[in-house]
Image 1 (spheres, rainbow, N blue to C red):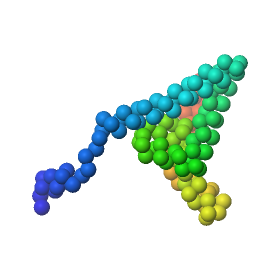
Image 2: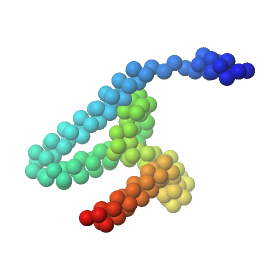
Image 3: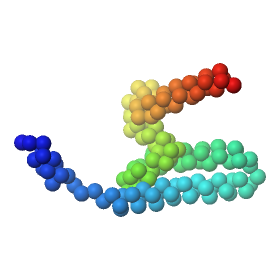
Image 4: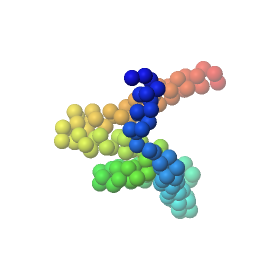
Length: 143
């Protein structure tokens, strides 16, 4: 079988992807998550909190909500519908840490929850930590 024949066979056997529909779902759900966050931000800031405190509170609310929805298996259903729309940084990261921890809770707190919760998020945390140290050192020596 030649490469051209193989490529044709794969193209025929592969399911057709609804790129426009999937993009629209991701845009709408991701936008809805961001809109909810903005409404929360506006409401909390209107209560008299500083911008910094408001941002921290909104981030905390989004993280707790994502973890609760993950534990209740609702986040998975939303993600299945919206695809990439649920990978809004805070909620997607909270889900990526909570899901393996919840899934492996029967293996114990250390080897189950403790070890598995960083299986997906671990490289991101390591990369972020190393990058922040390097940037901090550059900033320290340059200024």
